[in-house]
Image (tube, rainbow, N blue to C red; front, top):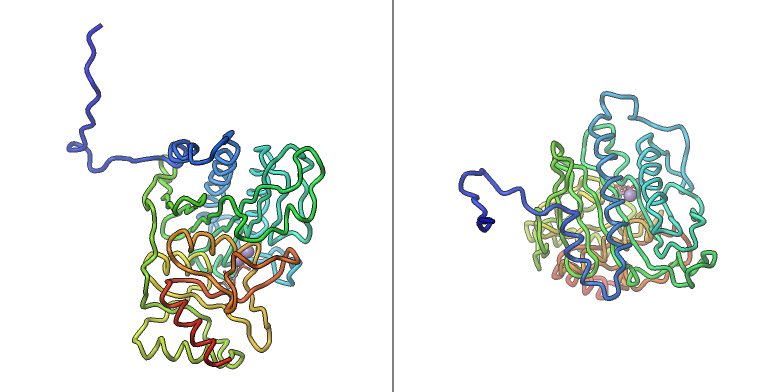
Length: 340
Ligand code: AHG
Ligand code: MN
Ligand code: MN
C-alpha cells in the first residue's frame, strides 16, 4: 500500500489546537512508578465536574441559581445556591469514579465516607471559593487537594487518612471561573494550566510549567481589616506602599492567587485581633495553593511555619496565610521576626 508520512501544516491554520487535558494527563502517568491510572482518572473526574460547574456559573444570571440557599454551613457562613450546587457536582463526580474513599468539603460538617474501601484516595475540596462574588459576575473558583489514604486498602477509613499534612498531597489544583475557565494542577512535577474551550468542551494546555516571578509588585490584602491587624502586617503593607507596589484584591482567593502567581505578588490573610487564625481554611484552601505555590517556585507560610508542614487537628481549621513570590514572603518573614 502506498503511504505518506503525516506532516503537520500549521501555516494554513490560525493556531494549532494543542494538547488536551486528557492527553496531557495520560502522557504524565509515567511520572508515577507503579501507577495504575487511578489518579489520572480522578483528575479527569474533577475536570468533568469543573466543566459542569463552569456551565452552571455562566448561566447564573439567567436561571434561578444565584443568591442564598437559606442555610449556614458548619463554619457559620451563609451558603449560596451555587456553593451547594458545586458541592453536589464535585461530590457526585468523585463518587462515581471509584478511586476515592473519602471526601472532606468546606460545605460538609463531617467526612463523607464513600463506603468504597477499595478507593485509594482522599479528596479535600472547597467546591466554590469566593462566594461573595457569585452574584456580581466576578471570578470565583474551586480548590482541591488529593491525598493517598494511609491505612490499608480494604478497611474502613480512619481519621489519619483525612488529617494529613499538606506535604503529603499527591496532587492539588484549582479551577478558576474567570474571563475564561482554567484548570491548574500539580502532581509534584511542576504546575500546568489548561484553558477551557467551551465550544469543543475540552481543556487545552495553555500555561505549561508555570513559574512564579521571584519578586513582585502586587500586594493583596483586605485592608478593611486594618483596625484589627497586628503591627508587623501593618508595617509590611506600609513597606509595600513605599516600594510603589500596587494593591489588588478580588476577594476570591483562587483569582487573587492565580494573578499573583503569574504576575508576581503576595497574598496576605493574617490572623487578626478578632480572629487570631484568620479566615482561610487549611484543608480546603491553604494546603492546595501552598503545594502549587512551591511547585511554581513561590512560598506559603502562616507567619511562623511552612503551610505544608502544619499538622491538622480538625477538618475545618483555619490558618493565617501568606503566599506568593519568594522574595516578598522572605521580606515579610524577616520583618515579622524583627517586630515580635
Ligand atoms: P469561600 O467563598 O470559599 O468561603 O472563601 C472566601 C475566602 C477567600 O476566597 C477570600 O480570599 C476570602 O474569603 C475573602 O475574605 P474577606 O471577605 O474577609 O476579604
Ligand atoms: Mn474559599
Ligand atoms: Mn467555598
